[in-house]
Length: 278
Image (cartoon, rainbow, N blue to C red):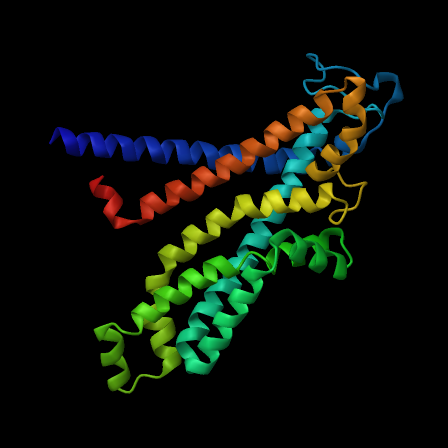
């Protein structure tokens, strides 16, 4: 009885912490959208101010409020991460079902395509796609979306290959059910747990890679208050002692990535039936 209560208490604590994390990230997105104008406002009378009560993250060489600028940049990163993660997970889900529907030849081609994407250095492929699509918002979304689906697709494809050997799948086929019917009505529900977990775990990777290619100059345009742009611009001022220009944006980026990673781990434990006995 006590052990059951302890497990229930741990599960409740996880749910509360998960809810707080989601609310915090939602607040960052909302505030970042509301502070777009403030993040771009310049005032040379307050340039290069160190952190203080009025400006918690200080100001930069153009007098821009670094706190508002950082929150706006994180809001942009989160939105891009959500969009690209959903697209990548959708591609992976369709690839997994196609392996079940379209026969051995299609399954073999999907396996080759997955190996091809995973075999190319990830950042190189991401930069090439983003550059080919004209960089900017569309280039970043295309690059991140088309390079993050392969690992999840391999996992879902493996699950599909196991499901194809299940007795109830074979019985459904013998009863005359078509491949599409079997895939969407019998296989897809069994893939939802892996799909949701993979979708959430794609968020931190998408956010980090968006910031990375923007930092290298192949992502969002320089005038946008993106975290990658903030960190790239601050590099030349670190030697002059303006440490706050990179420290606080970098720390908040790491915090957001860790929070998304925690959401993924928590979702995995909550969805997994076996976790109720831990």
